Length: 256
Image (cartoon, rainbow, N blue to C red; front, top):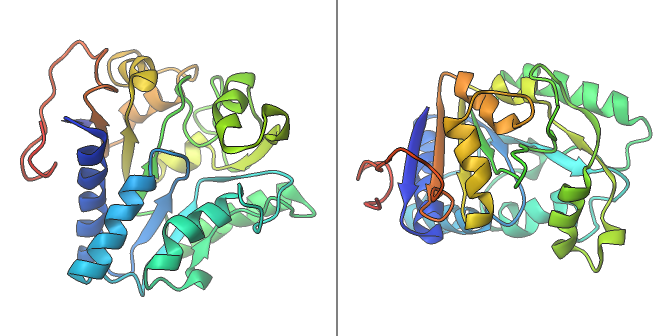
């Protein structure tokens, strides 16, 4: 596992964006695994900048998102399809037919999850997967206790996650109580994984994920077993780490 510690959230976002940009340049028909939430927004803005100013080409890129709320349509302003369109897809030359987000209003959610797994496999698997992390160590909507080999499925959201996501809704009562989510096992099959985190509110989860023992009670800690995972964090998110980690100049836009 590689750990890159940047001095600010902005530099963390630029570092992660540069990793993705280099992978896209190397493999134009790459399969991206994408994430939503507050943390990736600045990273996506940087990818948009690289596209517009440096000519990064998304025309042959395909993508699969980690998750979606159960019970809200893709047009809902808090759906993850809406998020991806407004924060990335609408601003780059990607074919939206090649972007995949689970349907929160599928008539048969279990069948939707199974079909999603099959679509990922048919595409050849995810080349590089972006992850955020919850304050309790969850990745995607794999809450503490989610099995290491879990697959895409319907999940119940914990009170903590509902409270964390309430800031995106008018009230906590409006936050869906369930979601469709890639499983830990699905995520771990990605060829490369990049997890990004900022703010001190993530510091405990980051420390447990990097320096603690791997456990299903801290889903992100399971990434320790992955052969090609990079944590890109700012100094606040890294504040509880016991070891010192430095970012190579070439890998983190010069931040340390």
